[in-house]
Length: 163
Image (cartoon, rainbow, N blue to C red):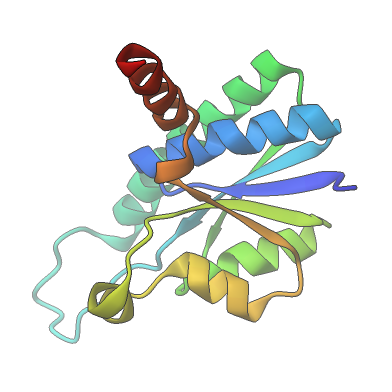
């Protein structure tokens, strides 16, 4: 089965829920986890007099934030007894950063969240998950919030209370 799972994070609430699901799966399969955060490149502007934040400060702040998100995964993996490696890279397209990292570290599964945007919203905003699905040969498990453990428990409790 799967021996090495890539779990990307952007620090969002949904990403946190997917982390729990990915670690549960890794624990059940006795798989290793590579936790991944993609940093956007510095947003250079054509107007040199408009500098919101110097590149070095931007990079340091972005990496610190990413490391905090990855630390959450590392601690959860440690608590579950799952070996974990944390990786940060700078990439202009997060989906390609995810794929490149999965390939570089020999991951045989990508476990990631999807915001589940549909219709025009999904087309306009785009979906990193959709892009990963269409640009990689590595299997991908897509975690949707509606399928979260908490949601299932709440649904069961509601059914039990009404019956």
